[in-house]
Image (tube, rainbow, N blue to C red; front, side, top):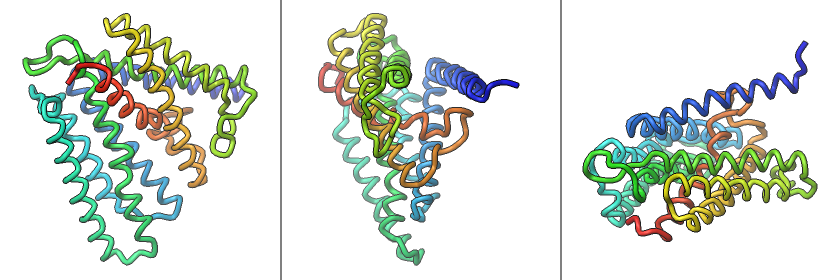
Length: 294
């Protein structure tokens, strides 16, 4: 009979390979497949986010929360599907529109909560709106990565380079994998024992070094500025660790080990993309500040 630990490792490895193939295919196949992937991630993580809030005693407006999350991410995804660059050329206008949409949606959520007659209205409203801000908006910003910088022409309106997205995910995965490997072999000092007892400072440093190494390799292959991308690896990995800890905090409050079970051995959508939710906006803002993309 197979050792349970070995069986668990094999299951994790097999599901990880399947996820990797699906992710790479969706990212590189076309803007349509990448857009579909981003919408799927938004919907999956939002659903699990709502379930965690229910475990914590909130009663979110699930349909409204999902609609708001998709409403936030859809305009950004449309940029990938149309030969337009209005998000790039009129970022101030887009920011105003998104703020207006979220404000109106918040008012609608508050109005609906008036008639639900629940005992925890503040928690309910917060749990309904938070996924749009914590999940949908970061994924929406991730959709801008293929449009930033030099790349091959897709259509006539902008440069589209999906390999930037692959590079970003590679940085995040390198940080995650090497933080785990270094942590289990060399970890002695706890990073944040109250929230995630197994994380160590040694693993934290190992993950950052690996992320910066992958970032430098990606910069070389993509013809990007090596210094800028070394910094990208640093800030992305720091933000990724924060995202992991934030989800661990939510799961500890909810009293669950995993946010879901869609991927055997890896948990749910939120478990797999928690680091992306904090790293994506940090990466995009960092590149906007240090490059002349816009």
